[in-house]
Length: 522
Image 1: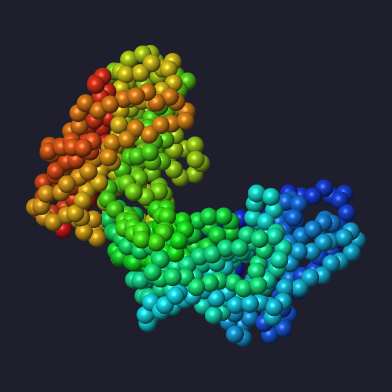
Image 2: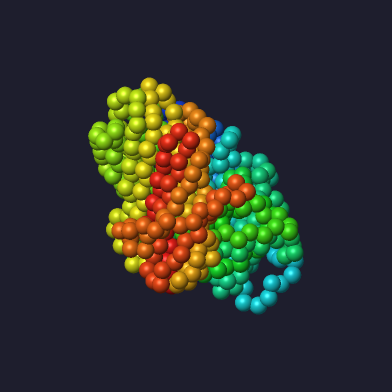
C-alpha cells in the first residue's frame, strides 16, 4: 500500500475536495489596505517559513501565502491558518489566529507550535498487535455558509498537535486510522465547529463500531491497481479527510467504523500512473450494524439515465452506459455511436464521447412525425493514455429502444433499463465452468427532470446469453417472483458470458439491453 507521510493544504489524496490557491474575489482597488505578516514557529521555537491560508472573514478573500513575508491585504478581519512541521521530532501542529488589519499599518501574528496540544485518538481497548496509527486533521475558517482556507495534514499517531483557539470562526476535524496490513482497519472521526478546544480527540469504543467487510474484485475494472478508501461525511471540514486503507486487487478488507456517515470507495488506477475511475458507497455506521459492499462487481451496464423526447427531438446522455449496480461513480470513459430511425429510415446518427467537453456526451436527433422510432446506442469503454487489462469485463454495451412517440409531447421514452446482477461469482468475477448462474434482473425507469415520466409496466422479459462475444445467442429461463425478475444462465466450459434482455410493455414498446463479457468463466 502506498502511504504519504504528511499532507498539507492542497497536497496529496486528502486534498481532492480542496480548491486551488485563489483569491475568490478581488476587493476594489480603492479600498484601504494594510500589511499582514504571519510568523510560524516550530515546537522547538525556531522560525520556519511555510504555507499558511489567509481568509477574509467578510467572505471575499482567500489566499495561500508563505509565512515570514509581509503581504498587502484590504483592511478588515482575517483568519490565518497553518500547519507547522518540526523536522526534529517529526510533528505537525495545526493552528489558527483571528487578526484585524488596519489601513496603512502592518499587523503581525504568530502560529506558535509550542502552544499545541496532542490530538490524542484512542480505542477503548487494543485491537491487537501489528496495527499502525495514522491521524489526519483538517482545519478551516468559517464564514457564513462556507469553510474557506482549508489546511490539512497527516502524520503518525503521537505526532499530531493542535493549538486551542476559542474563536467560533475556526473549525477543525480529525480522522484516526489503525491499519493492520491492509486487512483489518479501525477508523474514528470527530470535529469541532465552534473553535479549537483545549483538548483534542477522544477514546472510542471498539464494541460500538460498525463492521464493514469490503470486497474489491477484479473483472469490470479498467485499470490494474485498485485502492480501498474511506472518507467521513458531514459538516465541513470533516469530508475533506480521505485515506486509502488497502490496495492491490482483488482483496477483502474488514473495516470497523465509529458512528456517523462514511463514504467507502474503491479507486481504479493504472500501475503505470494515473487514476481511471472511482466507485463509492455511502454507509450509516451505528452500533450493531454491518455492511458488505462489493466494488467492481460485474456487471457494469446502462442505468440511471433514460432517453427522452423534448422540443421535437430525442435526447440521450451516454455517460451512464456503464454503471455499477450498487455503487456510485464511474470507471473509465464512455464513447458511443447513436442512431435514431423512423420506421426503416435512419434520420439521425452521431458519435459521442465523455472525453473533453461535457456536451460531447449528449445525443440529439431531430424527429419527424408521430410514429414508431428506434434509438440504438452502441457504446464501449476507453481511457486516453491507458490500455485496458486483458481480462476486463463489461467491455461494451448496447441499448435499443423501439417506441411510439409524438415529437410535440415532452416525455420519457417508453421502456425499462435492465441491470444484470450475477450471483455466486468469485473474486475474479468468474463462475465455475459448466455451472448455472442466477442473474438478478433489475428493471428501472429513472425519471428525467427535462421530461414527464408517464406510467409504464412490464408485460414480458426475455433473456439470452452468448458464449462467443455476441455472434450467437441462447435463450435463458426467466422467472418472476415477489416482484423480482431473474434469469438462470447455463455457463460454458471457458471464456466469458455476454447477456441480453428485451423488456416489452403492454403497448408493444421494447427496450433491449446488452452487455458484452458480462462475467467470466474460470
